[in-house]
Length: 153
Image 1 (spheres, rainbow, N blue to C red):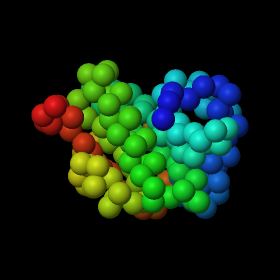
Image 2: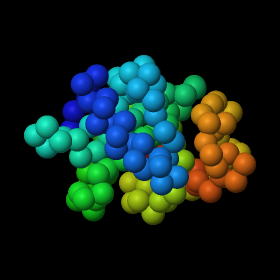
Image 3: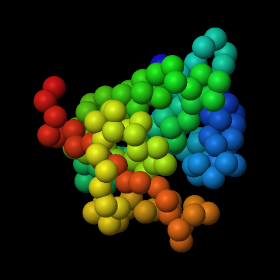
């Protein structure tokens, strides 16, 4: 696992947008990935991108774990967990008190210490991207948080 670089953008976009085409996450443009590339971690094997995940600070000690995508042929090998754990460690290093995610697979995040919460309890800035989502009016994602400030290191 390592920090993403601009050279990773085509592979990151292909992986994320493959899942977006299945209505499982938001599409990401090259411009958006370029602007936020410093927020992403990647898992690579040789020249091949196996997975990606980002940590996006939102407001007042809150950050989103977003853009988690793992190539389907290596799913179940722990790559997703490794990437989320890397983002949580980044959040700690930035003194972020709480991380959240919006997900269709809550069981995965529960295993990593996240708990389900009512979406309405999240900071308003959480919804900055929702208007772009094709499911905006009928969102089926589950909000989950992990309060880092309550964990013992």
